[in-house]
Image 1 (cartoon, helix red, strand yellow):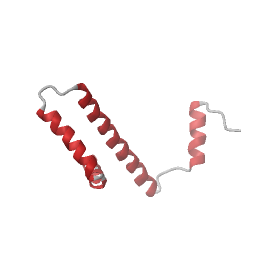
Image 2 (spheres, rainbow, N blue to C red):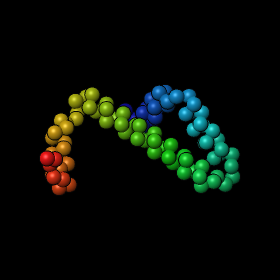
Image 3 (cartoon, helix red, strand yellow):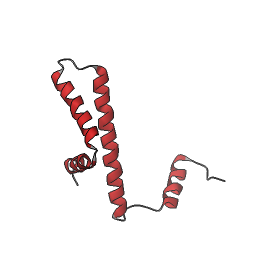
Image 4 (tube, rainbow, N blue to C red):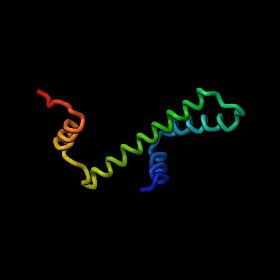
Amino acid sequence: MTIKELLIQEIDSTPDELLADLLSLVRSLKSTPNPQLNTYEQLLERIDYLEAIIGIRKGLESFDRGEGIPVDRAMTALQQQFNIPQSL
């Protein structure tokens, strides 16, 4: 699935009030000659949020296809990689 398709899927499942808020923010950026830093930071936060949602969905789709690994194997690999002691 392409990023464009994932974004469209995300937009379809996002509540209208969040989309309206985002659209309002984008319009304010477009209409303001010198957008304020706060507005730009808000836009970056929303982009981060959408990217996180897309990443989670990709991970869930991968898991649904059987591409994941069991949690005990994953935890063992992480413990070895980062020298994390096993819990008591």
